[in-house]
View (cartoon, rainbow, N blue to C red):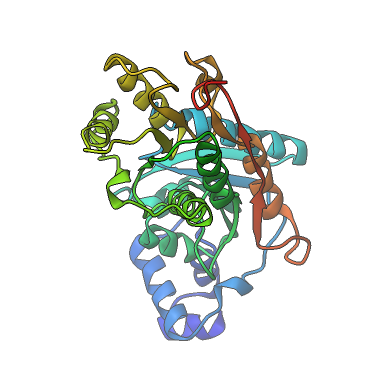
Amino acid sequence: MRGIAEATGLSIGTVSRALKNQAGMTEETRSTVRAAALRLGYDFAQLKKGRIRRIAFLLHSQHNTLSFSPFYSPVLQGAEEACRREGVALSFIAVGPADPVLAQIRLHQPDAIVCAGFFEPEVLVALQQTGLPIVLVDMYQRGFFASVNPDNMRGGYLATQHLLRCGRKRVAMLSGSLAHYSIRQRNRGFRQALFDAKVCADPDLEVMVPAMGEGDEGVVEAMRSLLSLPRRADAVFCYNDSTALAAMKYCLSEGLKVPHDIAIVGFDDIAAAAAAIPPLSTVRVGKEALGRAGIELLLSKPDDNPSQITVPVELIVRESSCDD
């Protein structure tokens, strides 16, 4: 810190507050200190860490919606339970790439951060520069961050294998953006199951749901394209339950019988899956367990746990995928 203070002409106390991302200075001063630190090769990982007393739970604004809340709300609940047990305060922050993320972090003054779901790489780089411990939940970034994820690939494999074993010949996948790690892994499981069953993957049967707002319009458009194929799909694996429920609603409105005409499987096992008519087959994710594991990984000593944790998933078979 003396070296940075000499390079910038600032006091050691100001340098210390800037590196620890504390309040009480202008953004220009903070940027000057951090630029000098990076130029001099300062290792942010060597900042002295005290006991973690406050954790910020960050959720991307694109996940802070009605369609995503059935998944991320239980994740947040699991994180809250773990924090209460450990006597740690937890604050929730919904942020987007255009938001002043670092200003939000400074406002809450956390000692550590949980990032849930997808975040742009630029946002993660900015968060890393705070020097705070960070754990990603339902997200993975090779080589930089500790993370906790469901076994997404295994779940995609089990769902697709189940549909094939039910005798389905034209299994499609409705997918979100493959920029999302979890969706990309579920798609890998889908393709691996087809390969192992010696079924040729048909590009026409892999449809990305267009982002068209909060409603079901994107799912309807995707299902319409699948059902208009000369050899249409007789089964659909959906990347999450909200998509699967919207797809099933559309199929029923078009006079199709589920699962007789088309079988449907989702992913996540949100509460609405079991309540649907017919009940939705899905891959169960321990959502509260994800949140708890994220907090436990943050609070553990570096050598106590692996930096990457995979939470098992389970196939739940209900009436939407099999006639018997």
